[in-house]
Image (cartoon, one colour):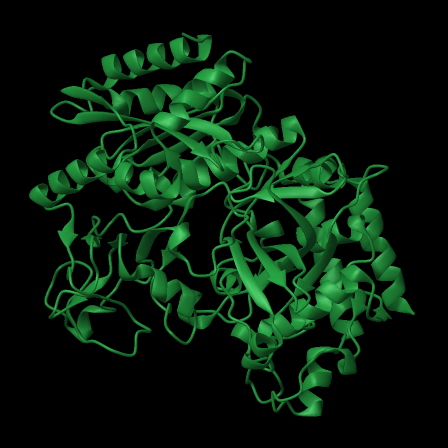
Length: 587
């Protein structure tokens, strides 16, 4: 037995003594195990079978009404020094955090089963992948982890093999506790590769392989080991010549990340032979290859997507994959026991997400953050190279946010340092529906604000460190699908037509199209964007690509103030790059 497997067994014994479960089950990831767990949860009322004719092997789970989303104010990074966690994270000293969590875990699994879930984030044979083990008292978590990771015997075997090489695994301890919001914490100990989560059964609070491991812990691990763990989709764009280039893209919430990952080309592009391949919709791990390029994997094996708004119009690929072997969480149901949410044109809800008779006065039928958990291989556009052990080579990195004005439809960074500044300055404007205020700019660098496991200043420096001699780094771009005209309407149609922008991006990567140089970066000439047939007013195209120098002077000033908030940890190279742009805007 390897030293790592011995360490795993010791840890399981320690957790069992602390939590005192009635029994311990080591999960093997088999179909028989999955059926047994589903039967158990149906008998307990934790899962509700849906219409077997229209949605075979699909189930509905209803969470506690106080347990429906990430709880960022209770999500902490526990490093010995507060500064190492940074102002971008909530912090607690490790000794204090362990004591707090262990007091909550003491005896919490009495009368319950403790499940031990070995899992692999990424293809089981990929050197880019990393392993972990989650201990939980929730069979619902087991069922979701089976979809979202490579879970079970194969992962345990990899942990054993890597133990002989001294490679660590991430340890995650979870209990639903009493689902008491006052006793709910998600603690991360990056230096220990450890996660402790108590009091929630929902999503990333409980599926510890997702945001906790794949981003917060992995981002720290990646910095130490020389790679990147990012909140990015990965999509392959195949041109009519049969050539495929891969793009990684980072967007804050409500900016169309999943839709872009599963984009269906416009009709004219489809007829010409363009194809879009989905590698991942949420997380991207990138590592430098021997050829100097960044090679990426999607560490997840499934999608944990937001249901409301997913429809035949917005994302037909996503909707089509949900017809079988899917777990729905907090959606509504129709009279014929089919899942339903706002955005679907057909069907009428009879039970809302809490199981009540649907009444419009009670609010939305499906919770706004209701979810589906489904295997990635069920997506029609899932890439045949998504399971490649070496990953896929990234040609372009795209950042984006929701900005009604100021930010053009697309622009390109001059070099890697400029690209890192673009990512560090990423921002989105709030909407009235979400916050009660319109146009409030919130910085969300690289879309990692809730997920970076250490000080953002150090994180920016880590990004800059990849610019080494011999490196063939991706070109960096910024997009904004949400710019509005003077009439208050969106200027760009979005959805499948976003491929028109990606086409220009890939031509820039190839060096086969020109660009207009501006103070903020390289922009397309209007004639070089394929907008024929869109019916866009020429004035609207001009607005989409307009650079407001006065507005950008204010933006660059605000970016400087934001960088200053990280003090000496903010890299001097980003300050110099910001100053260069400020000078260019004076001309």
